[in-house]
Length: 140
Image (cartoon, rainbow, N blue to C red):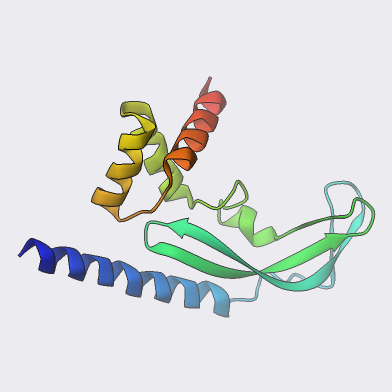
């Protein structure tokens, strides 16, 4: 019974992840015109859509986002990342919360194992350590 439950659970998460990815990738409302103000004060021009893989509670999601590049500071950004709470890296906000919980309660190695075993989320031990310590610094 356990094997059937685990297989069904993982497949349900995979399908949900595909649906969420399709939904986000079909929505191009993040392309807010040919240019946006850059934080440096320059003008960032639309430079196409860029993919990025994020680790979510539904598995890895590849999201295509509008990308804007500023010639003044030579940097770029994707406005949707901030809107979705993904501007801090490659972990979704929910996965970051899970990492914070396990990182505060058990060793980073155990946290890595618990995330995989209980949530099916693949986050390396080093990533658990980095993110848990970063979250701890933010709280302090």
